[in-house]
Length: 119
Image 1 (cartoon, one colour):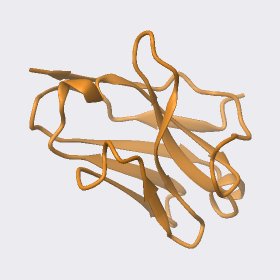
Image 2 (image 1 turned 180 degrees about the vertical axis):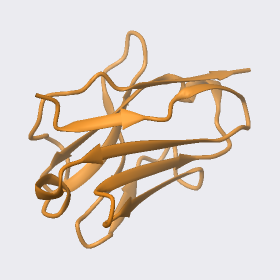
Image 3 (image 1 turned 90 degrees about the horizontal axis):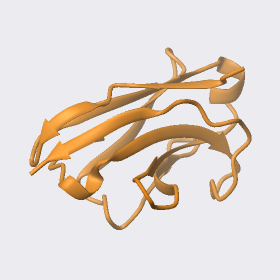
């Protein structure tokens, strides 16, 4: 059973924007850190951004200043606003929940959402 569901990916030109959504249940959303991860072909999955229940955010150096993670408490949804996209941002994007550092996650991975940035 998939606990977190990603959506919002697509094809965009370099310099463009996309907003991803991660919908989950109230029980998961309210007490866990939520992270956005990505996996490009032939590469390991990496943590892109994370948000704590209290709202504190963290970002990978590669996306700082371009990506913004946020949460909507009423909708149990976490968003990833991606601006100034680059071809190297092309990947399948996933969300998951875990402990504060998000170095490990609690749930099975969903199908993710594909983001493709053309040059």
